Length: 96
Image 1 (cartoon, rainbow, N blue to C red):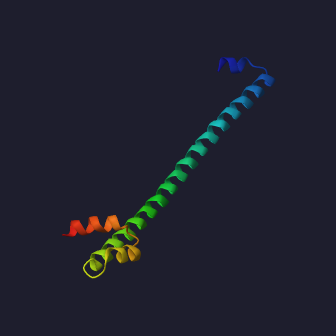
Image 2: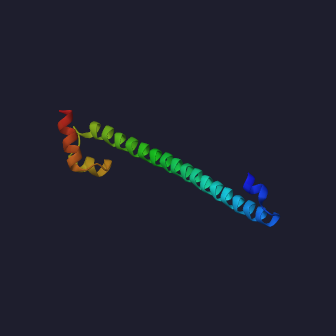
Image 3: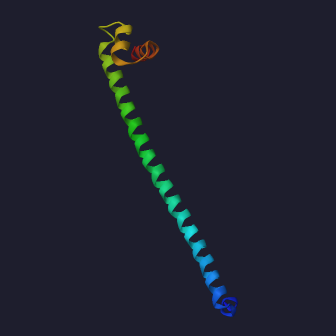
C-alpha cells in the first residue's frame, strides 16, 4: 500500500489498469472453466441417456429372443432382434 501511495497519478493509472486486466483474465478463466464443466456434465448426461436407451433395447432384444428360442431358428431370431448368432447361442446355453 505504501508503494501505491508513493505512485504518481500516471503510475497509479497504469498499475490499476494492469490490475484490472489481471482480474479480468482470472474471471475469463473461471468463466471458461465453469462453462467447460457444464458442457462436460451435459455431454455426460446425454451419453448416460444414450447408454440407457441402448441397454433397454438390448434387454428387449433378449426378452424377445427368450420367447422365440423354442419356436424359431437362431438365424431368424438374430435377423429380427439384431443380436448376433454367437450372442444367441451363448444366451441359449445360459437358459438351458
